[in-house]
Length: 225
Image (tube, rainbow, N blue to C red):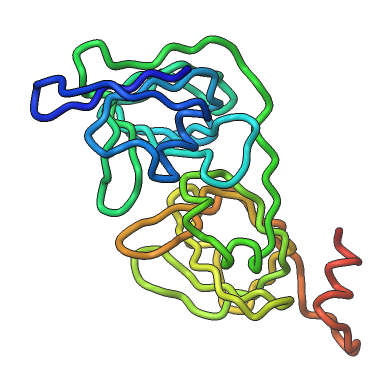
């Protein structure tokens, strides 16, 4: 049984509990903001400056969340961790903040393979909020259609015509060009500055220009898989 303590300023108001996983409860609105939460056995999936993401097993929709530490995290992708912190909304993204309460923190208890979450653009578009803070593989073939500001670019699925906004946090933006073709992409799906973005870590880049041949992109994907 997970334990939660609701905080108002520095005063403890009440305690609530939930039978399902802590992260799933948070992400589906069963835990109020301003609550101290404990998460056990989550897998670290990505690390950024002063923060990291964790996924609750079994991996799935609404089972990932961002964790803010404020200093360089002493964790790595694949670590299994227990953590305690303050659940809040950070500009539209759910977050566990480890700066409160005084005994907040994270403990590495083991290691595990990273969850393998493979999604199509159609599956993401059906409920994008479900995958915020999760590391996912987008399996669609995509073509870069537009270079945007702030190190972002828009790619369109050749299979569904749905767009994905890529972000260069983990990726070298200088290598991106209009017309680039991806067999798939792997990275962190998140909510940033009022929009859903895909902080890509790696792509399966393919040459989609075949001289003197007329091939569909689907045929090209078969060739390069």
